[in-house]
Length: 354
Image (tube, rainbow, N blue to C red; front, top):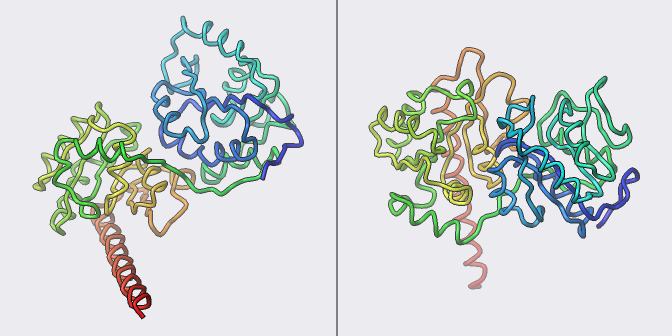
C-alpha cells in the first residue's frame, strides 16, 4: 500500500546520501525498501562512494541510479577530490531532485553538503544545536539503538509506512557460477565449510590473526573446510592467518567481488568474522555467524537475530575459547535443525503416500 508523508509532497526523483562502507549501506536497506514501497514510481538515486556502484547495481529493486560522491573536507571516508567537487555540485543540482535524504548519520557537516544538492525538499537527521534545514523533515539523531532502527526512525518521523527491519542481499545464478570458477572452490561443499574473515575497516577493530588461526584450526579438526576471505589490501593479513594454522585453508582474499562473496557466505555452515560488512551479509542471508566486536559496537551494529548471530565483546579482549565454544554451539544447532528438517521431509513423504 502506498502512503504519503504529511510533510513531503510525493516526490518523483529522490537522492539518498550515504557515503559509507558495505555494512553501513546494508543497514540502510530497510529504509530503501520503505522509499520504494511508499513511493513506487519515484526514481531513487544513491549518492555514495565509488565502491557502492556495485552495491547499487545489486539492489536494482530499490535503487535506479548511482551518483559517485567525490568526498568532502571533514569527512573521513574518502580523501576529497577537490577539483571534482564543483563539477559534482553542478551536475547534481542540474538533476533538480524533488527530495534529498541525508541518511549518512547525525548530520554534522553533511547536512550542509546535502543542502548544496539543490533539491526542492530535504529530509534527514540533525543534532540539537546544529544546522537543521527543516524541523518538520529532520528527525533528532538517536544516540542509542541499533543502526537499522536509528535509520528507520527517520522514515517513521516522516510518517511513512515501515516494511520490516530485516536485511536483504539478493543473489543470482551468475554469482554462484563465478564462485564455482574461483581457485579452490571445487573442493568446498555446501554446509561443509566455514568462512573466516580476519579483516576489518580499521586495525583497531581486528581480532589478532593468530586467534583467528586457532579458531580455524579447531573448526578444521571438526571436518570443516576453511575458506579465508578479505579485500585485496588484506591479503598479507589472510596469509598470516593461513601460515599460523595447520589447516589446508582456501585463500580467496582479493579474489571475490560482492556477488561471489555473498554466494560463498550463502552456502557456508558458519561465518567467523570481525565486526565488519561481512557480518551484515551473513545476517541478511540468515547464515550463522560469530562476530568478534570491540568497544560499544554491539549496541549499534549487532545483528537483530541473537540466536543465529552471536556477537562477542569483552573489555579485556575476546578469548579463543569463547569463540570456539560459541562456534560449536551454532554448528550443533545447525545439525539439530538439519535432522529435524529430514524428519519432517520423511513424514511428509509418508503422508503423501497414504
